[in-house]
Amino acid sequence: MTTPAKREDSPLSRALLLLELVQNNPGITADKLGQRLRVSERAARRYVAILREAGVPIESVRGPYGGYRVGRGLRLPPLMFSATEALGLVMAVLDGHHPVHDEREPIGNAVRKIIRALPEAVGAPAETVRRSISTAPDRSAVRPDLDTTATLVRACEARHRIMIDYGEPPRSWRTLVDPWAVVVRHGRWYLVCWSHDADAVRTLRVDRVLGIESRPETFTPPDDLDPVQTLEDHLHQGWDHRVEVIIDTGIDVVRHWIGGGFGHCEAIDDHHTRLVATTNEPDWYAAELTMLPVDFHIVDSPALAAAAEKIGRRLLRAVADAPQVGA
Image (cartoon, rainbow, N blue to C red; front, side, top):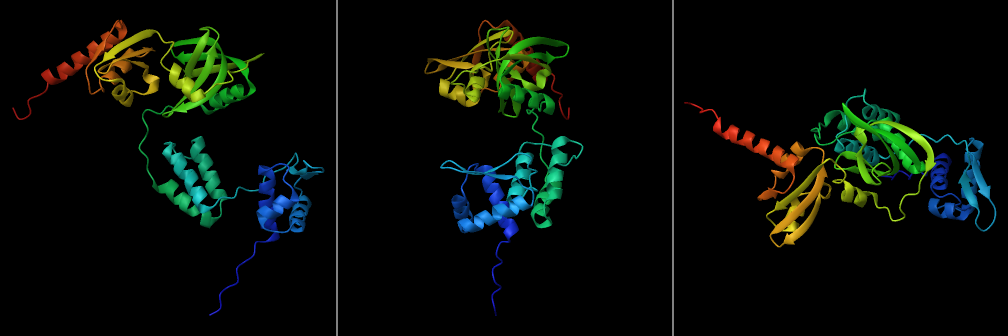
């Protein structure tokens, strides 16, 4: 029995691979292209010629720092994925609990377009997963408006000051900020910024941004800015109601149960930890504290104390008013 000869890559497929290399490595030389494609330098130049004949603007620069780069006006070739890459994209979207089955939604429609553009052998496994897999909704995730998010990201990139309408109806306000970064944390999107009204760092929920007005002024973010750490440090600051809670356990246990965005923890001793924060949602904050597996004590936080008392009364009523089943 004869073994079928291995099919060699066509000149066109080699040329497309070369185009990808040039796009990802501007200034790459013919020698390097040949090494990456495992062909001679002369063959690499021939593939460049094929692309140019097809109208792809491949430019060359002479000199020790010269090489090939893609010129302006390029229309990118069709996306090329392996079956594993296509499946990975669909799974990543599902991991984010996006509605991939609903083609009326932007994400679902985008996934459908990608899969339809793929060859049958590549797209079929991804389409099967898209159609068949069900995901439970992430109730804590809040997805902001896509256009609002894109506008904020562009403002961060351009370093343009912006005026924001912020809040939840009927309570909202305008604030002037320098947008430093957009950060995704546990399914929620935040804008890390400098607030000129508060003269302090603020972290704003992107889903509560109601309007954006670009301003001509520019800004320079801190050189040592770490967006994620800045979010963690300031997520609990700047709100209306003060929070101070003494928790009857060591700081390591508290940090295991409470995330950094919940407040600032400081050790009192080996068996007590102080939690300090601010909140605009004392009812929610009190409910979260009830999840702690140890005792805690609310200190000089009237709104939080009232919210905790309301929860306590409701729990007591739930026990006292329980129906006698079978009576």
